[in-house]
Length: 148
Image (tube, rainbow, N blue to C red):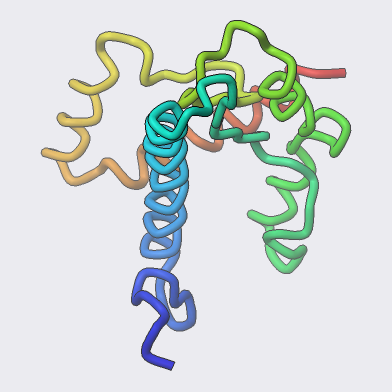
């Protein structure tokens, strides 16, 4: 139709393209929440809080069940009841100011001082994407052990 952005077209695109497009869309959600929070205060709604929420990998059919990757993700993902915890946190956490990102994940590595330098080195060596994929797999496996 000419209105769909190229990044949103997954047909015929490789995994790397789809993964990067997904990551960019999630980043856009975070930036949108931050900007919306700023604007709401300017429009006289200082008590409303806009928060980006990530439930982590949850046992849904988003990947289907057609290959080993989908099977591994699904078998290690949060159950639906566990996936809702980040949303519940966003609703009831009185410490949130608005504009934050809330997740069920065990660890945001990006909070460590060495993380940006590590990503830069991986990019220079042209191994950032596979390294992040391996890291994400590790996070998924740890996630499966974090509840129940």
